[in-house]
Image (cartoon, rainbow, N blue to C red; front, side, top):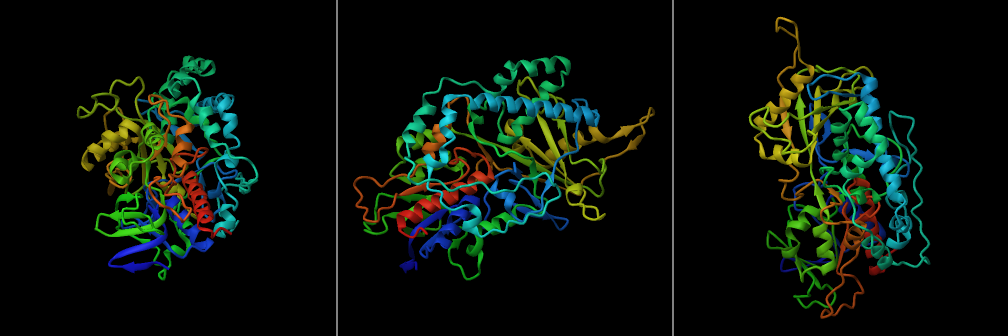
Length: 549
């Protein structure tokens, strides 16, 4: 067990960050038999960028909320109630609704273009090497279900979901050639942006000619990565996406956190320590400890010692603080990888109303942010060719059960530079902006100017600010075209950092392991990617500690 000496704590492994990756790593180690374990979290809660709060006694995700694909996705095998998005409407730049058939046709055209992009990317030579990433990248010998003991039953309102678990078992005799895989991506020719690719797609160009509105609607694709399509690299689609629909969890992803955390949340567990902001990870053995050469310092002045560390801090934190956070500095390859990857931004605006004023059968709708300078001098476009889009989700329908209506709540999603501008605004300004948009789309007057269909004043408005959050500094991970980032940088960042040669290390452990959505080569920028990276690094640490089952 951990020992205490003058306020300093000593452990076999310290996990930093209690987001989904950190929780999965810590609980996996605990179940493997690691009894000398500590999980440090800067916030006063677990979850990281997964945050579920109640509105009108209804759980609502203010951070990550979507299960991306179902076939093989470990999240789809949990006992979560899920809701598919099927009935979607598009409003044009003047706030006029398109009919349902045209709305669906335009959206399907955009997703079809994305599938063509992904198919072309898969033809690149480096991509074929990534197909064996499980063999190259790790020792993932136990599946999520075996490790966590999760039930196979899934409560859902769609019958089209394939919940067969993927085979995560690999042949440990398979030779691992990490350098070969990294070199394959480094040797790729210069890439283009997703926007450039779309503009070169002959099928889409013909569609643009027939339906001009389709061109600005391609910005729908920005919401996945939280970045402008001119900034997202064609290489961004190297990752493997699970097939099947994207689903929302109406009851929030809090249940996922509870499953991932398992026994760590037990009242008898002393593993989790909240309000412990890590300020320095010193792996120089400054304390000259033979068995616990890593010192982890916190803002409260507490020092923890360990044989090895799993760092799950978000990419935004690493980019901002890695030079002061690690001593000695991280290897040059890790520093370069951190600097080349992109941090996207997705924020939500939650609008609560006294009653719904939108169509009851709508799952969600797309509308446009105001044009440059239209309202209060706010330039949301900053010279961009296409205006920004807002995605609204109908929470009332999502929570409707057996004839009982759900809360009259809309959740607006904004991304990239538009989200950054909104984060700079006061809450009252944000409320005015979004109420103007909703009135433009839903309020109707007769010829005399009398309101026929009105939009009521909101009961409350909440604005997330994930970039301003000092413990996240962003919301998503992507490969920027300007830095030439590639999967090689994700792979590099997923590699453990050894102790300096000057440190005597009889433990046989690596100093620092990284986990999180920025370290999953196939699934970066996703909840399931973060989860699986935590399990993978837990396996690696368990092997080095000699406790692997």
